[in-house]
Image 1 (spheres, rainbow, N blue to C red):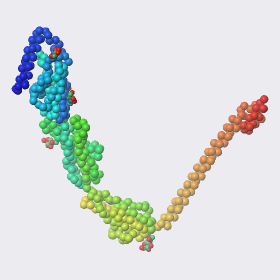
Image 2 (cartoon, protein in one colour):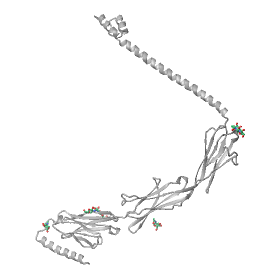
Image 3 (cartoon, helix red, strand yellow):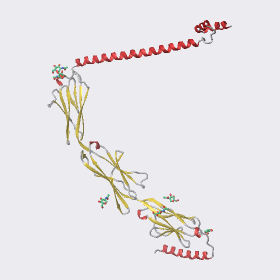
Image 4 (tube, rainbow, N blue to C red):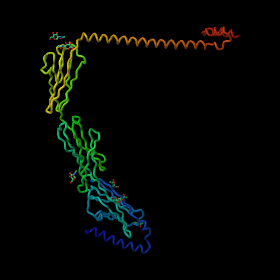
Length: 400
Ligand SMILES: *[C@@H]1O[C@H](CO)[C@@H](O)[C@H](O)[C@H]1NC(C)=O
Ligand SMILES: *[C@@H]1O[C@H](CO)[C@@H](O)[C@H](O)[C@H]1NC(C)=O
Ligand SMILES: *[C@@H]1O[C@H](CO)[C@@H](O)[C@H](O)[C@H]1NC(C)=O
Ligand SMILES: *[C@@H]1O[C@H](CO)[C@@H](O)[C@H](O)[C@H]1NC(C)=O
Ligand SMILES: *[C@@H]1O[C@H](CO)[C@@H](O)[C@H](O)[C@H]1NC(C)=O
Ligand SMILES: *[C@@H]1O[C@H](CO)[C@@H](O)[C@H](O)[C@H]1NC(C)=O
């Protein structure tokens, strides 16, 4: 027992005696209404916790805070425990607030506020300390992976309390992992693994492991790895124009996908080397014919290789005679033209007919309205109906 605790003990004893004396003289009233009021506190590791104890009615009785080990921290405004992290925030007859800064997991526990009435009344507040999960780490990356491999990615984070949650994302889209939680001391180690059967679509895909935890409010803890997948080439031939004609230009493009990139590609014709390198130009992956000739008919093949394999594609060239094609073309053009003309004429007819009908109907209505209704006899009606504005005067004369 140190000096301060001793002092406090003595004070308490003295105070107790005093209270007894006062009570016996009937001077202390309303003691039964005096209760310290506290609240549970939750704080993140490294943060500051304010422990507040309040009394609604108090006759200057002292308040005291003690820690889970029953050590007195503050008695009124007097500090009792030597710990620089513990400071007085406010001490009055109605309140005793202390702060504990740089909180560690070992600060967690039940704190007691005592009001030194007779008998002593206490209130208990639980201080919960949240363990901040460490930045996660991803393991199990074989770089590069080969298509067909089975790999297991593991994400691990230490130090969370309560246990953190780990979530996996494949290019921002959530995927399900298998979680495992182990306690180590007061905190938890959380591990989540993801089994992958790697294929070419995984090449360049980012796998992210995110930590979800109450103690992480702003900075999200996450780790990302980008998968690199090696795979055998796959080629296909893209050609333009669609109909190769004699004398024209033709481009065959050997589109090959593979990782590592299969470069260069090899072109052959009917199983042997290209026969005419003056007109058949190989540039990168492309084979270009400057001027097609019927003798170019044949099977062209492009082949791409990387260390994982070889792939090839074939294109059968059939050089059309431009004259034969031309006639065909004319026929099509002729039919097209005739159809267009027929459609055009039909449209015109419809429009003309429509206009005629509309105008005719309008005229008919106008003639009826021009005054035939109020004409006293047929003559007048005819005159009125014929009438333009100039006849309006004459019309009056007839009436009078
Ligand atoms: C603790 O109390 C002090 C003084 O009222 C205040 O400035 C501080 O923000 C409080 N801290 C917490 C963590 O509530
Ligand atoms: C508390 O003590 C102060 C000063 O010692 C005194 O002025 C006040 O009247 C006391 N309050 C009560 C309720 O006894
Ligand atoms: C405070 O925490 C303790 C221990 O966790 C719990 O038993 C009690 O119900 C809590 N009190 C309040 C007011 O939440
Ligand atoms: C958890 O504990 C088991 C058994 O001790 C162990 O095999 C496993 O590797 C541990 N997991 C983690 C994430 O530490
Ligand atoms: C095609 O090749 C033959 C023989 O090489 C040549 O005589 C002919 O002129 C060529 N035709 C065209 C359109 O280039
Ligand atoms: C190439 O194909 C065209 C179209 O069938 C044909 O007219 C021509 O004779 C062929 N030329 C050769 C050399 O086979």
